[in-house]
Image 1 (spheres, rainbow, N blue to C red):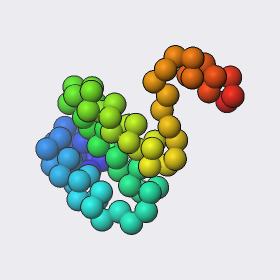
Image 2: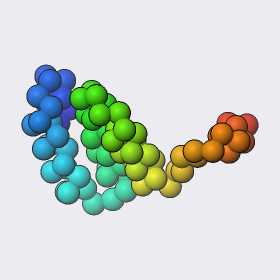
Image 3: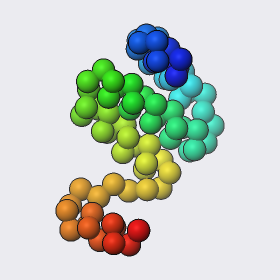
Image 4: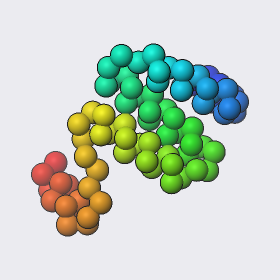
Length: 79
């Protein structure tokens, strides 16, 4: 999928990533693949769906994405 994406063959890359997602057996590879799908959507200009996929990838790793500004500031201070 990575090579196809770099070559600009986005439809084929998407198919490869979707197939890899179906074959992934644990959260870590699934999250990595989901982030690749998000990157592909970003390159295609589908920012809204890319954001959803990036958040899904983080959620698969047990990381939450805050949407309320005060929570974001608290998390930044914590880090």
